[in-house]
Length: 83
Ligand code: SF4
Ligand code: SF4
Image 1 (cartoon, helix red, strand yellow):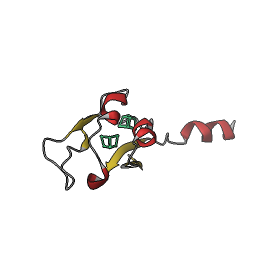
Image 2 (cartoon, helix red, strand yellow; image 1 turned 90 degrees about the horizontal axis):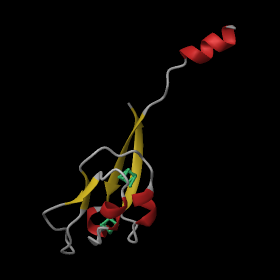
Image 3 (cartoon, protein in one colour; image 1 turned 180 degrees about the vertical axis):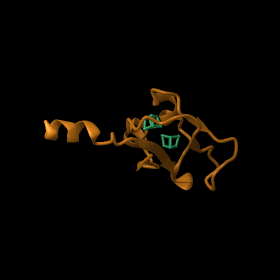
Image 4 (cartoon, helix red, strand yellow; image 1 turned 135 degrees about the horizontal axis):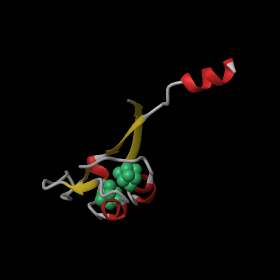
């Protein structure tokens, strides 16, 4: 019983996810924007040093990692932190 109570009282660990885009690696292909299942990504109006628009987080990321896995330039790293 005490063990069960301890389990119930253990706070649920919640995480906030944030995709970090390496601006100058991005080639503006829009794959990540199109494939994000929650439409959390968009493209900047400005350009990086290579002359491309850059993906950025505009919504709430669920941490599915699709963008990180499909980016052909390895420009995205999804980070997480406790909230
Ligand atoms: S990790 Fe998933 S939810 Fe988050 S921005 Fe990338 S594709 Fe979208
Ligand atoms: S998939 Fe990669 S290269 Fe393409 S827009 Fe997204 S971050 Fe940029």
